[in-house]
Image (cartoon, rainbow, N blue to C red; front, top):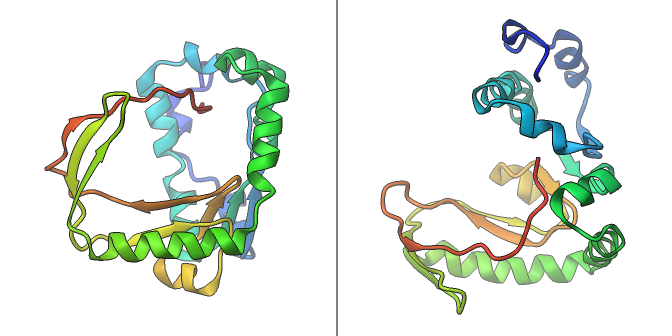
Length: 189
């Protein structure tokens, strides 16, 4: 990202796109091993590199390729150091979070989704100072329960991340009001 010319970012990844023509499922293991290099990359270069993946992501969506993101390649000593995590604790928490009954998680997720599916205005509050209001009128609700079944595919949900366990709905873009406080670190790039 710091050495390759930006002109290469938009080039089609023909071999990979061709392989996706024969793919119906994929597993991502994560990476890179050491994310500290991302700090050296200007934001506009990162944005262009992400834009260059659009053709690949479009192919995943158009072909309805099911995919699972399994973060085993992200739980490295270098990443733990970068994020300020205790590596053994991070691995233990992740392993425990994956050792769940996904059918029970799915049933609970469906109950939450049913409530959100009929809701229009949401207000989220917490003791840490979060007080956020927004509307979700007529937005699709996606249950991420670690399972990609035919019902998920029919709704346009083709991907999962493990560990899993969330219900996602997008907000109406122009009406969020309030404050949200993030008080837990999250491992990202």
